[in-house]
Every structure is written in C-alpha cells, then in structure tokens.
Length: 331
Image (cartoon, rainbow, N blue to C red; front, side):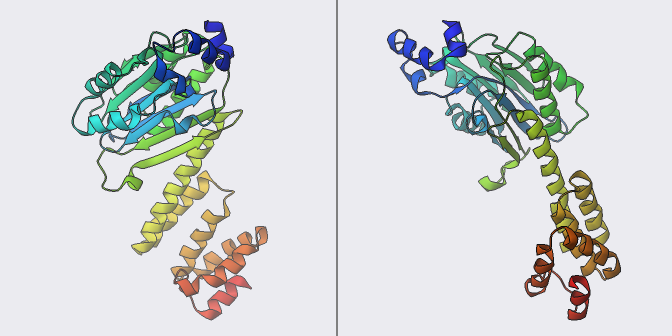
C-alpha cells in the first residue's frame, strides 16, 4: 500500500474509502503536504520561525503558522490546518508546546496520519509523527527547535537538518532556517522531488495588531528550485528592511544614517532602481544636490519613467527642492 501512497495519491484515497475510511473519516478531506520542515527559536533575539519545503503546490498556505510572543506550528503529512490556530490559541493561554500538542492530538481521530511540531515562546518544542505517515518519517526535537519530515528519500534527512541548525548558530534565524532546508534537500529530500517552499518569522513579543505579526512571510508556490527562489526572496526582503530603516532615518533628519541604510540595501539588490532612486532623493533633500544628480541621471538612462516620477514628488512633499533644482535634476 505504501507504493501506491507514494506514487498515486488519488488511488490511495480510493483504497482508503473502501477500507480505513470508517476508522479515519476526517483524513479523507484533508490536503496532502508530505514534506520536511523546521520550527525554531533564536535564543538571543527570541524570534521564532517555520521553514518548509514540499513537492506539493503552495505548501506555505497550509503548513506554517506563527504568532509573535506566542509560538509557531508546522502541520504536515495529511494536513489538519486547525492545528495551527488552535495550537497557537492554547499556547497563548499559557500552555506549553508539549501540553498544547498532546491535547490536540488526543482529540484527532486521524492522528495516525499527522505530523505536527509546536514550539512556544520559551523555546520548548514538541513534535508528533503518526504511525501511518509515509516513510521515511522521522522527527528530532532539540533545544529551541524541532525538525520533522515524512515521505523522504532516506533516513538521513532529519539528522542532516538537526546538524545544520546547530552548525549555523552564527546566522540570523531566517538565514539559519534556509540552511536547514538546504541541508535536507542535499541529503535527498522528498522522494517525489520539490515544488514549493515557505518561510515565516515572528517576533519575541506579543503585538496588538495581527498585521504586525510576521516579520518575514515568504512563499514560493510553484518552482523547480523552490529553495533557490526562497533564498533569493529572503535577500530581497533583507534589502527592503534596510530601505525601511533608511526611511525612518530620513524622518528623523539623520541623513548620514539614511544613506548608510540605503547603501546596505543597494549592496544586496544593486539591480533595483528604486533603492538607488530613494538614496538620490535623500541626497537632494539634504542639500547634497551635486551628489544626487549623477545618481538620478543614471536611473533615468535605464528607465525614463523615473524622470516623470521625480516631477510629481514635490507636490507630495517628498522632494523638498526649488523649481530650479528640480529642473537641473530632470533636464
């Protein structure tokens, strides 16, 4: 039966409808997300993350869940998405990851088909792998992390993930998680191949507004190389973090700090005209027009739409220069 489950999910569902459906009626309606994942916490910053890759479309819509100051959840195999919000609710009420997971598993009539990991804000992790998860199906719970996988090519994936997490403690949490996923793929990965990946990071402290929850929220829904794309997106996300810091420095009238942050952004994403553009605007707004003009000129040569954009900024108080100075920039 495992052969059919590995290669022909539709046939598996038909077989189950004739045999075990009476025992596990709820699993029939649940989506597949056979995969490998990690839930982790940075012991220094308190940030928490979930990283996942699968040979299934849009794995990020199903597997990773997180709430700042509360915890993170990865729910996979035959996915019951309710483990995400329900688990986070229990941890928010003060229950540990282990207690919260045990409570939900005990109520799940299809638990034999589940693979789930919880991690709370204290860095305590807990995982569960059902007896009917497709081999190779393993888990490893350590300090501030848990790695788990099912439908893997071999038994080396989970040990490789645990080692990668420990070996890359010098990296920021998001980059560290990507290294773990890359190690899993290098060790063999999903027996079916790869298709999608996702990464979320939440903060150490509870937030008032839900839209402030995720510090990083990246998804690759369909790709031949989802981890390569995920790593690229993370690099772009970091560049925009520097852009945001630069904008805040501009608001505080700290031009030197703004230029420093914009420069970091540009170094990560040099082909992005917008990052260069706002650096030029910051220079112009700081009476450093002679430095700004060559930057504007280079941008206009690549895309003349930015010239028109520049003429519109003064009306919105985003470019505070004289008409003569504006003419020098655009002409």
